[in-house]
Image 1: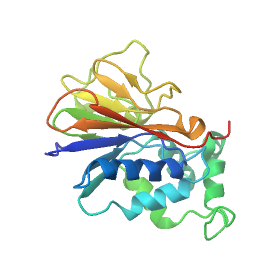
Image 2: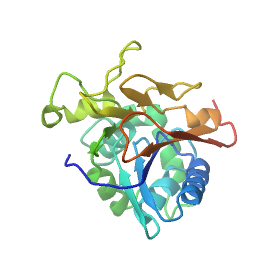
Image 3: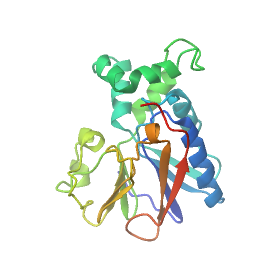
Image 4: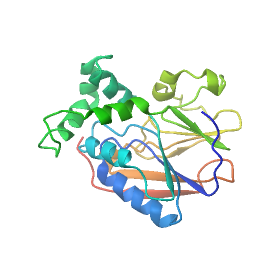
Length: 233
């Protein structure tokens, strides 16, 4: 949870849910806007529901081009997937929430090497994901932050599972909180102290990348809209 000193811009991508096409388009747009590099924060939920979870994980593991830093956070869907694969949580819960589509992406039909087999290094990557990232002015997390608790006292499960009430405007003290998790087809949703970036991209085909100035507090200075094919309901 330590601060990271940065200069320039930070780009945030939320809730891809198996939409590798949108990830590739988003990265191309980000790199076009900042040829010298910068930071991309991914707020989790890379897997499930959409068709290409394996491809997203492989791309994130491969890492960024020179000049870029990628911060990959854990979402509740990575938590469910990891629990199912390591048999520390019920498999059925994951399968019922998009896990079947993820396993299909790992099958031979989905371009994988073995039917439904998730490589050990993918499982290890899931297990190593962090739950929160903080810079000078902002906190990045999958689901949200409890404004009543200091950062060091946050419940890791709450960081990836909590839901804000619709009328909650606060971030965390002076920090603006950027998150996803709670979908809004007409998002992003902007509040005084937080920004919710989950646009249900796996179904709508619409992903919105938020751009933040590392030297200025507050919400995004730009939104990059990525439009792809509408997914299956």
